[in-house]
Length: 106
Image (tube, rainbow, N blue to C red; front, side, top):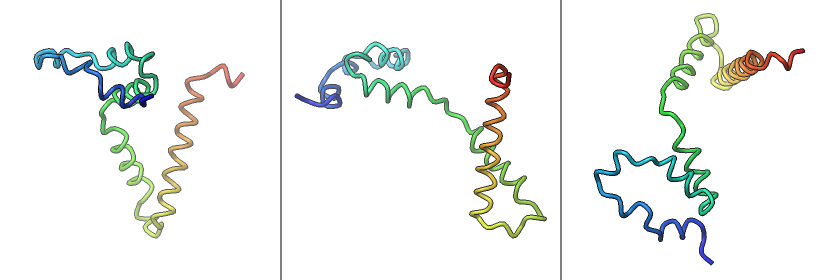
């Protein structure tokens, strides 16, 4: 019995597509369709492919570190700076969650 990956690699699902068809090929739809045949690979593919490419998170992290590390806080060690940033991110996430779920506070 071969592994799910080996079965996928040895199959010819996409190899018969013409180069012109690749532009309109629905990758997420393909993996949704093959979900019963390749449950693990389809879940992995949908998790990875559905992530939007954006630099917002990294830009936000750099701007947060700029606000935490100021003239008055120049003696913070890298470890302390990282802890401050992680704590701020955790508190911000908790606040966002509370903003989305007003019924939880009743």
